[in-house]
Image 1 (tube, rainbow, N blue to C red):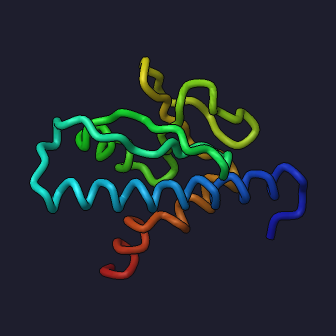
Image 2: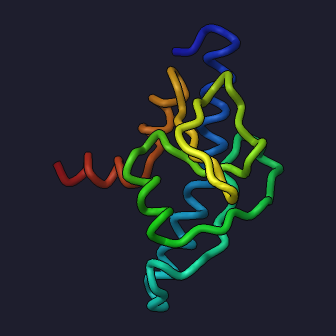
Amino acid sequence: MATSEIEQRQLRAAKNQSLFREVNEQIERIGEKVGSSPREVTDFICECTNQDCNDRITMTRSEYESLRRIATHFAVKPGHVIPEVEATVSVNERYEVVEKIEAAGAEATKLDPRSMKRRATA
């Protein structure tokens, strides 16, 4: 159970970002269903901690899949990183990949729909 203020902030951030990730998972599934190429550019939603953010990130489905291999990784617009709850893993001109840290990392893994599927089939 989170007791410190920073742990509570980390948990809130992970929950907010996980909601955006769920939307992006749906965007990716739609791309698969309509037969778009994994190299085709798609607008995904910024997965930052700001629940009011509606910025878009241009990525290919392949790029999205690459970052989704790790449950604690999220794509955010440059400048949307919150160092108290995440660390920057990589940067390009369109987006940054951040990794949730400490309590936020554990919460992000717990809320990851792909991790849930793996646990359910194990």
